[in-house]
Every structure is written in structure tokens, then in C-alpha cells.
Image (tube, rainbow over all chains, first blue to last red; front, side, top):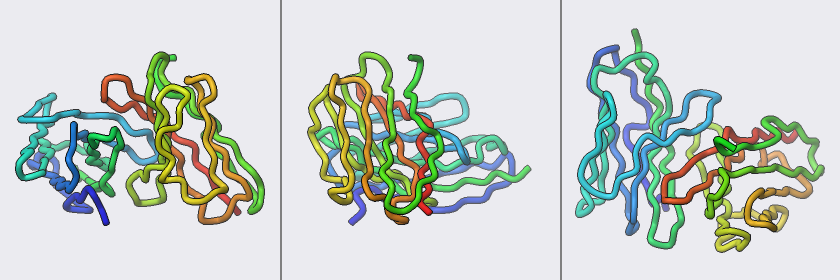
Amino acid sequence: KNEVEQSPQNLTAQEGEFITINCSYSVGISALHWLQQHPGGGIVSLFMLSSGKKKHGRLIATINIQEKHSSLHITASHPRDSAVYICAVKSAGNQFYFGTGTSLTVIP
Amino acid sequence: GAGVSQSPRYKVAKRGQDVALRCDPISGHVSLFWYQQALGQGPEFLTYFQNEAQLDKSGLPSDRFFAERPEGSVSTLKIQRTQQEDSAVYLCASSSTGELFFGEGSRLTVL
């Protein structure tokens, strides 16, 4: 049973394209995180959100609590955006559940 | 320190050896998490500490895995009698206000 499901698993885009990665979860949460992991690199936190929408540069994250769904959007994608994007939710019990990640490749 | 520090970054062990992986969280962070990440997979929860108390160890895959955080700061994940299926990246994360900060991970290869 996966508490967090992400789609797509793999995504290839041309530079400049608008990208959407989706995350659905089945547990009650206090917060949802979007994380970025570059090949061979550590994981960095992009967003932590519990409602609405957040924007940072070309990245936008939205969450719909009623539908238990979140999206991560990348506008004007660039090859340096190539990474694995992971959705993680923090339950009321302070446990984190992770999706398996979406591997994004942006081609110049 | 400025971030979460893990050591060693890479460890090769022969099957049956014991290994110890260290995590230095961000100073003052109460919560500390250990995760196991197999190749091509997302992180899988192993265990969680709040200060020195191990509040959840439900993710530890077997009794060969043991974690401690005796003084509420540095944590050690110990794996006894390593098996090939233990090969993975072991990630440590710390948190204070809910935001997660990850270390670079310790990549364990069991031959």
C-alpha cells in the first residue's frame, strides 16, 4: 500500500516547456513537501505547504486538501531542472511518507 | 553545523560484517529521521527520534538494524551481519519547525 502516489514516474521535456508533476495521498496530513534530488546528490526541500499555493521563481506548488492532491509546476523549464522530484507528506503522527519520485529530464 | 552531516559517504562491506552510519543533525533540531533509499526508489522510513527518545522504529526491516541517539543530537544507525539486500543509500533528516533537512546520505554496498 502506497500512502503517496506520484505521476508520471518519468518525464522528458524540451527546454522551455511547462511541466506538471502530480501527487495524491491517502492519509491525513499536516503538511506536504516537494523535494528535489539531483543524480548522486542530496535531497533539498523545495516547498512545504498545507494549503493553497506557493511560488518560488519558476516553481509553483499547489495543494487541494479536500481532494488530497498536490501539483508541482515548472515554468520555462531548463536542463538544470533535470532531477528527481519527490512528494512527501507529514502525517498527524509526525511520520513522513514519500512518493517514489518523478524523474525529470529537460532536453536543450 | 550548517547542515545535516552524514558519514561515511560511501561504505563497502563484506556480507556478514557490521556497519555503523553516523548522522550529525542541524544543531537544535529535535526531530531526526532515518530513511533507506534503494536505487530508483523513493526514501523508505526506518525510524524516528524526538530528542533521545526513539518514538517509532516500525520501519526497521529486521532486528539486525538498530539506531540510537543517546544525547539527543548525533545518531548512529547500526546494521549487524549485513546482507546484500541492505545495499542502499541511508538518508538522515532533521527537523525543527516541520521543514525537513536532509544529509547527503551514506551509500552502503554489501558484497
